[in-house]
Amino acid sequence: MCPPAAAVIAVLTACAACAAGKSQQLNYRPIIGVLAQENLPGDQLAPAPSYIAASYVKYLEGAGARVVPIRINRTEEEYKKIFFSINGLLLPGGDVDIQTSQFTRAAKFFYELALKANNNGDFFPIWGTCQGFQQLTVFTANKNLLTLTNTKSVALPLTFTPAANSSRLFQSFPKDLMQSLSEENITANFHSWSLSIQNFTRNSKLKKFYKVLSTNNDGKREFISTMEAKHYPFYAVQWHPEKTPFEWINKPGMVHTTSAVAASFYTARFFISEAMKSQHHFSDLVEEERALIYNYSPVYKGVHAIFVQNYYFD
Ligand SMILES: *[C@@H]1O[C@H](CO)[C@@H](O)[C@H](O)[C@H]1NC(C)=O
Ligand SMILES: *[C@@H]1O[C@H](CO)[C@@H](O)[C@H](O)[C@H]1NC(C)=O
Ligand SMILES: *[C@@H]1O[C@H](CO)[C@@H](O)[C@H](O)[C@H]1NC(C)=O
Ligand SMILES: *[C@@H]1O[C@H](CO)[C@@H](O)[C@H](O)[C@H]1NC(C)=O
Image: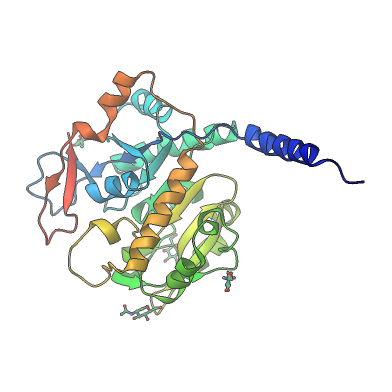
């Protein structure tokens, strides 16, 4: 016998509720911490010793988040307070020593807090771009396994692994975008160092921790271009999704096609959807307001600069 329609609806509603109840309510006011770093060596006119490229801020804002800058050279106490106030961390690209810099010191402190938090059921995502990708591999492997590649200024298509389609990151991408990413040269590569498949495969810590989602090749060596952690909401791209819509230096590797812009947006959208699962918050709105990036003004660096605008911090 068929149950009456009302009963079916009741059952469906109950199941939907239980699924929703399992995870907490989403946080639609997510705040992402972006870590500053020591200035580029060539940045002589910089008004202060550390910076955040404004493209990372716009990239996150464009996907529905607000940004809090995390300054280097701060106390662990201060970092801890920020950690429990924000809903995710972005480690940007750049050019610092990923073993000895103040950027690394701060990143490591947050990385370890994030491991512990996630282990305790306190969801906290991390996104690493380029240097951020490399930094995450150094933390996980507890050593630097990078190798030089010829990838300084080139746009490449992604070579997806069989794991890509079912990955958390790429699962939410439209099919036509996945096709563009796999066929068109639309991911901006601006790195000299890479994690080769060889070194990844030989290192049991990395292999255990990450799932490789895409690779690339500089003609000599195959390296990892996208990965996600198996048991943590940690994501790493060797390429630069934030450059596509927000940086305008005219050089090889910079692409502004419709599909390239879409690829940028979908990465940010995914990361912010992860941040929405974090319930961290500032102790009050005054503290929140004081921490936000709106308290700082970006400096225009010029149309030929690698970053069109930078935020600077003492
Ligand atoms: C960080 O501290 C070191 C020394 O402790 C100093 O040399 C450096 O200029 C500081 N950097 C920033 C951005 O404050
Ligand atoms: C592997 O890592 C070492 C550093 O530990 C590096 O010197 C070497 O070039 C890397 N090899 C490859 C193939 O990536
Ligand atoms: C596009 O990417 C391929 C690698 O898949 C590379 O061989 C080729 O040089 C790239 N083309 C351009 C115009 O960058
Ligand atoms: C992912 O799925 C699409 C079809 O939806 C398929 O064409 C493609 O080959 C798959 N990619 C990989 C790497 O398995």
